[in-house]
Length: 313
View (tube, rainbow, N blue to C red):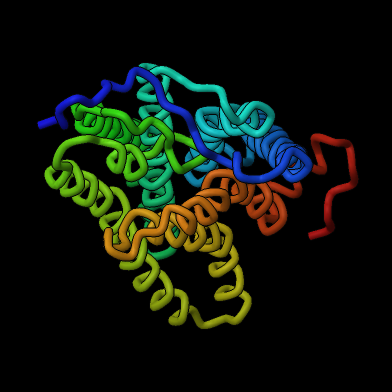
């Protein structure tokens, strides 16, 4: 039950980077705005290139374009509010606005997790069952996997938002974070949050541990299959098709697991904020950067689109 003689909170204030002086906040603003614009531009380029180049109309690039779109909405849900907070750190937001940001953050964040899993499955089928690849990974299968990822994201987001905002918030209204997330909000609730913390942990396991296990199993089988390829050139080509995806997966799941899976007793909101900067500002930029720098087909498509001479085969 809420504490007696307490005031019900109708709005929240993000602490964000308010402890820094304005010169540091201005520096952070310039850096984060630059990374945000690069992320948007990079993901728009990736989606456009895949749409225009017929050679990239394959399941792998379909999932990459879906991931780019999801990453774009994910950053839009978080970074503009964070940038506004750097310029005006004392601007409060009502509970409805807080719930809206949390909903979209969770929806697209969870969608990203399962899209990466779908991309891992695509690589598994392509390398371990190449003769049936076009049958297994048909257009309908790709649409079902992408729709399923978004559906899981929406369902889990509804569960989390309903769980958190069903709680009473009294007196405390300053959130020790730079965006609205589940754990910082639970710390402000003026009632027992044990059930909510269990729900949060179960959801985190479902959207992080389960996809990580599936991707890990896929890559164990993929690597064992690649090592059986007779030619060194064949092994190199097979590894190259997986390198970009594996790089993004390790960074994405690594940062998310540190934030959401560590025990409550080891939780430091200060450390979480530092890791969250990486997870929400830097990681979304890695998708277009990694796939454009490490993927030969994307680089070739970019050269064609810009009128540059293609690489010699």
